[in-house]
Amino acid sequence: MKKIKFISALALTMVMASCDNFDLPNPPGQTNPEPDGIFENSGLVLEQGEATVNLVEANAANQNVNVANVTELINFPADYTLAVDMQVSGDASFSKFATVSTTLVDNAVMVNPDIFNGAIQEVLTKKPGTYDIHTRFAAYAERGTTRMRLGGLDAFYGSPAVFQVKTLDPAKVLEEAYYLVPCDASGKPAMAKAVRMNNTLGDISSYDNPVFAIKTEVTSADIDNGGYRWMIAPQSAVTAGNTDGVLGCNPSPASDLAGKLGAGYAPGVITLLGDVLVTVNVLDDSYTVNYAFETLYPFSGRTSADKVMRLYTDNYINYTGVTAINQRWTLGAQPDKNGPVIFRQDPNSEQETNEETGAVTGKLTNLADGTDIRAPFAGNCLYWVEVNLVELDYSISAIETLSVIGSGNEWDLATATELKPSSDKKIWTAENVVIGDEFKINANGAWTIGFSGTSVPDATGKQVYNVNKQDGGANLQAVPGTYKVTLDFSTKPYTVVLE
View 1 (cartoon, one colour):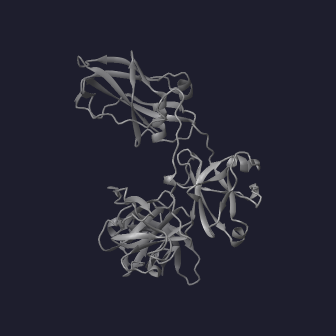
View 2 (cartoon, one colour):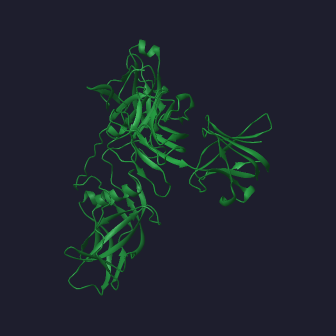
View 3 (cartoon, one colour):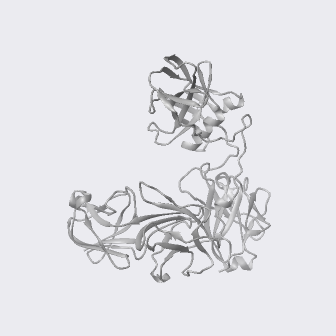
């Protein structure tokens, strides 16, 4: 395999344009200082401003938006100034919200439309449109550097209000789907052969993630003809069957494996033989080309490649799987611990631990300065691993126990039958398990990680299921009885067998 530097989409420079009338390019919500104390007896009353808000019109008029009005203010501390923060959320629970400062003009609470727009982008979406936005207001008495919250630390004013908000127009119009278009030797794109690319973060708007990727095969015939030629087309061009808006490639002077996209450029040319991954960022018009890998090998300890529990993919972007890791590990793209592409912990990024789920997340690099990835537990333990090879993100979640739970034990975690692992942790079994009409495989005696799936035909009379990690997925349907249960992680698809 030709050695190449694996180029992440995160290395592609993002270019943002500012709004015409305001200096900040759709800034996110702001972090305001914590209050120094509270003033409980304030009689503040806020009423919602105009419920329909057009940020485009406000921005064009260079005007702030009236989101609330102060209709009453009594028992306010002397020599203090009233300040109001607006919390913005996409739902009534405010499970995710952004806080923005307001300005008071007479009794009107005003918000900069650009900052309002940025808060919506932070909590909901960057896709332009009209949305129902939930708001609530926290109020403060300020004097110098002193800041006291009115009514208590959990007090909000102006009852949670819903605004119908038309967000600002984007600096660049994006489409929701993009396609890889093969070209003939003359450079003419074959629009009928266009293949839809995958958004690297799944089913998400291109405004929230403008990075797309697709695997394609470069054959010997392509190489004999000077390489595989390609362009990128938006959905509108594919639908119309013409080349309007189709983008060619301008390779970087440093590498023909990366460059810029543009309407005036010739097709890109790939001279790597085999499966390759083409990744594009349609916001900043950039692209990279890397090898595409069928599986990834989590190497740790002395485990040889033929015994490694691999990670699998169906889109050459996201790789997942159950694997045994002995504390420190690396991620190989081939069955070779010292192969040309080995991923390690990015030394410029710290691992982070989710205190609720126990999952450890981090960033990968295939450069020489990478360090071994640390697993959260010492010794050889089982983990669920997820990798996004375009974003170079990973997460690992420990699987300490696996149990059978279902209608056979009334879905009681305390009485679920625990499976026993083989020495290599690939096979987990339990005897004399009472199975009802539905069951699942549960991890860690909690509902964070579970395995379920679908039944498959079996000629031997056993009940066989293809399973994968699912959070809240469908239950496995069974014929009630007492069974030996075998969970097999040795190959994909993973299976559960009742016999």
